[in-house]
Length: 289
Image 1 (tube, rainbow, N blue to C red):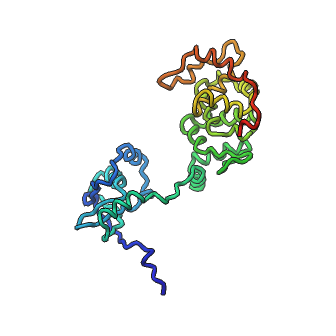
Image 2: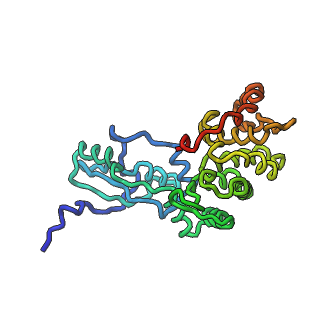
C-alpha cells in the first residue's frame, strides 16, 4: 500500500476565539487598516479562508491570516468570535517565517480575463452588462488580442464603474465607428482615453466630428503621438483632442480634460503643440513593430 504521508500536511482544524490568537511575530507584516476596512465594507462569508496557526508552547501564533481575524472581529463586533484554524503542532519559529515569506512564491494569480469570466458564470450584474454591451457591437471579450476581441477587460470594468454604463456605451460606439474595430483601437489606453474625453466634454464632443477628424489618423498614429505627449491613457486623450481640435477656430478647452486633477497644463503649451502633432511625416509600418 502506498504511503502518502509525505504529501499530506500534518495538521488538524479547530475553531479558536480570535482573542486566543497571536500575530505579533517579527516576520509578520504591518496590519493594513485600509485593506481591513475595504474588506469589512464588502464582507463575504464565503471568501473567508482558514487561518494558519503554529501552536508553540501552548500559544497560537498566526502566520497566515492576521487580516482575516481582524476583519471578522470588526464585522462580528467581538474578539470572542471563533475562526476556523489550520493548526501545525510541529513548526519552529524559523519554519514559520520561511513559510510566511514564500507562501505566494508559486501561486499563480488569476488573470483579469479569468476573473471577469468567473464573474459572468456567477451571474454578477456588472460583468454580464459589460459582456452584453460588447457583444451588441459585434465584438467579444477575449483573453488575448484577436480580431473582433477586446482583451482589455479591466479597462472595460474601470470605465463602467467609474463613469457608468452610458459613457462605456458611447466609448465603444466612438471607437468602433472611428476605426471600425481595428485591434489597435481596442487597447486599454485608447478606450480609457476616449472615456476621459467623453466624461470631460460630454455632448460638446460631437460624435460625427470625432469620427471625421480623429478618424483621419490611424489608431497606430494616435498611439505614436500619445507616447510623445504623456504616458498612459491621458496621453491618448490628449492626442485625440489635438486631432479633434485641429484647424478649428474654437476647439474644446484643454484644461477641461484635467478638471478633476489638481493641476492642468498651461494653455500656451497646447497652442503651440497641437498645431504640429500630426504634421510630421508619416512613419512606415515597420516603425510600429
